[in-house]
Length: 235
Image (cartoon, rainbow, N blue to C red; front, side, top):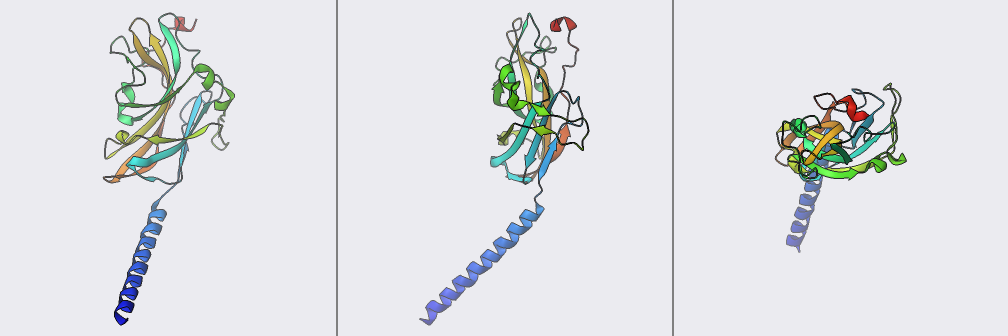
């Protein structure tokens, strides 16, 4: 009987000790976590589109990095810039990618010097999320109230949680890009290229082999191809 009591008290003390250790580690971990919330309104023409990223914490296992994205536009988005003749507007496509690959999505003015994409859903280093038609993206659901001055709150109707593929976290320190882009089909070159696009970046840094800490990254404007559009394409 005495032996059983000793075993019981030893088990109880061990359990309480483990609980205290867990509580300390848990609370220290919570205190070290920070919420993330930023958008890319500050660096581009406010008449265009807006992306916002939010998260209650900034530390994630790379197998489960899920963030809340809001996005929309203040008026008619893209599409109308689809070039007539050789180019056909297809859709707005959404992607994740490591920031260093940003220039690898070939634009409509670059396809003559590079091999254009044969499948816009399968572009190397770009992880396809989904696509929206011109009518879908220009519906009331994606309309945003974008303000010129930062002290006014920018209102976005559409929100969704998206999981970042762990393959995006290629480097010890880097940035996760999230973008949506106009996709055009070139009849002459038999492939796809992008038109106007918009992107936001979330910085990351590995804490250990399976854990990353995220932080506010850069914001960027809608990117036009490096060569200007020929005005005739708008006629």
